[in-house]
Amino acid sequence: MDLYRSFRRVLAAMPRLPALHPVWLTLLVSAALVLFYNGQLWSLVFDVWPGRSFHDLAFIASIAVFLTVVFNLVLQMVAIPRVLKPVLALLFLTAAAISYFASSYGAMIDKTMIANVIETDAREIGDLLSLRLVAQVVLFGIVPALLLWRVPLALRSWRQEILVRGGIVLGSFVLVGLIAAMFFQDYASLLRNHREVRFMINPSAAIYATARYATAVPSAMAATYTQIAERVVRGPVPDTQTGKKTLVVVVVGETARADHFSLNGYQRQTNPELSKLDIVNFGEVRSCGTSTAESVPCMFSDLGRDDYSEARASMRENLLDIIVRAGIDVLWLENNSSCKGVCARIPSQTTWSLGDTAYCDGGDCRDDLLVRQLGAALATADNDLVVVMHQIGSHGPSYFKRFTDAFRVFTPTCDTNQLQTCTREEIVNSYDNSILYTDKILAETIGVLEGVSDRFDTAMIYVSDHGESLGENGIYLHGMPYMFAPDAQKHVPMVVWASAGYRRKTMLDMACLALEADAAVSHDNLFHSVLGMLDVRSDVYRQELDFFAPCHRPAAVARVVDDSGTAHP
Image (tube, rainbow, N blue to C red; front, side, top):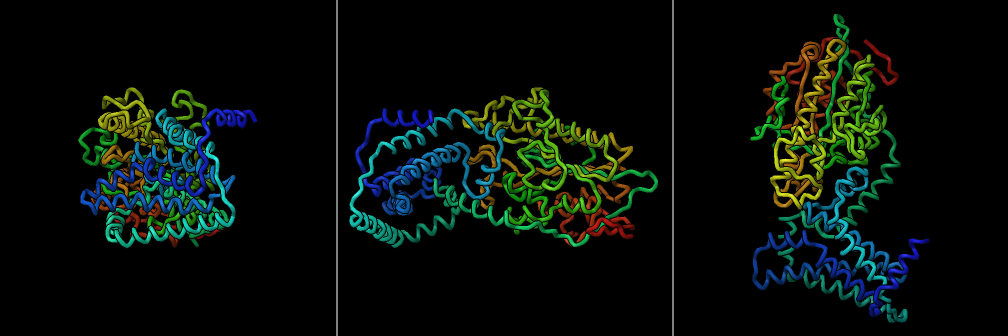
């Protein structure tokens, strides 16, 4: 109630503006949104349409007219008292926030980006907050919204309203038709060669993407859980001489790009620890998506990128479910926003639940805690085991939070989440330091695995969920629509390590694997390759997608595990 009274006092203190008919108000708002909240769109248009002839300038002007007319036409559906002003105020607030992220980071809005926003956590939101964002939302969102409330609506009789609104609708269609007739070839060329334009129109792109996301939710909720594997075949049997169990650790990296791994030829030494170890580095790996919300569920799904959808994957048996059916224990260790539903049916632990103050700062925990949790879990493990470690890795824009001062090797660094205030050199330096820290974490993970070699035959596979843009062509962070995303957001690092005992047990030839490491693979291969690492076979396993298959002979003895858990020789 106090907040409402304060709001009323603020409105009363503002000057009262002249009365406007709803049609004129929506037209003015539409023009303002098109001209002042679409800097990313206009920047692209002027860059890709360099001609300055009268026809070219008329075409560019027609884009503004076309969008204003279409916006105004759509807003007529809500141009009624008690509805119009709240809707317009919400549009201003939404458009102000989107224009900030579009201009600061080159963000484009699609369904996946909306999923990222909805599924993010407080830590990630905190990394993106800044005074510049607050200032832009206040100046371009809250102030215009307040001014709207001071504009009285001038309404006519219902007969006049029908005539006015009918004329607006008819005139809008006529004007759109004239623009299409005069500039059809220009629009066709622009949209054919630059399909990303439709993701830049603010705020309509966000509204459309939100509607797509919202309509997919009910169908996903109504879906029933589907068990995709009719049978599971597992082998080899445990080593009868040593009695050792098998342990595979899958490290899901965050925001690491392959071309900043020195293992892939990067000029800086960002992998000093891994380069000392007997690992196989895969240099041509592509991600399933450009965001965690898309890539993580996709890489653990059998669907592959071409057939993947969140709705299908969320209620479908994934890689970890099948591994559990094979009689192998699974544990998910989380140091990111969440497992995105992948660990819904298996045990999981989070780093921030430990209450650690040495490695956590306000809920932001470094990946060291994952290594500690792994060691604690292995201390009591007595069965074949798969552990997934979901890193915070190099998550931006706060790259400076992902490493300690001891790893501030590349300087000067960008020590703020406002990347636009840093030079590109500072941004890259901070990012490379975070990659250096990931190298340390992976080496320590391998050290933990070597430390349990008396009880386990061990292996590790590391692959990042997606890459990152570091200012190339004015684009930062990640999450762009896949078809338009630069390769830096899709080309990810992947590393495999295996102990001598694991190699003997599974007959894995690492020299052979090294020869295969230059082949082009993707997240689509992970599902089948991890099954191959564990020698788990089912009707959904595809050997051609298992990058271990050419170098990994299955053991001669296997057992079939039916759905009741009964083993059959």
